[in-house]
Length: 141
Image (cartoon, rainbow, N blue to C red; front, side, top):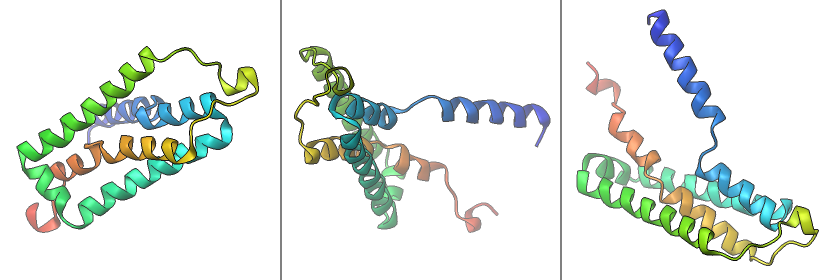
């Protein structure tokens, strides 16, 4: 690997690691809005979403989604629609004081926080889309 390629990879790795993704933002938002302890329920939902992705890939649906342009597009656009829906809903919501500012957390149920975070990660095609670029050792020969 050339030094310039390695440096580009190194810089990209740092940029990707430092910038928060939708999961990190969801947990930060849940923690600030509903209190630190409820942020853990959002984190657990993200982990369940990753497990869902793992299950999809383990049973072979990841390969089907990755090789079928239509299936991948359906998953991708469903995820886009969900993220847009979350954004519009948040944008139109009435301002609510954060748990840290008021000392009293708004009442959003733990299962709802968990389900929202699960849907965020389970609907993210990044995990199943990575299978599109992955090859078994026998395919690389």
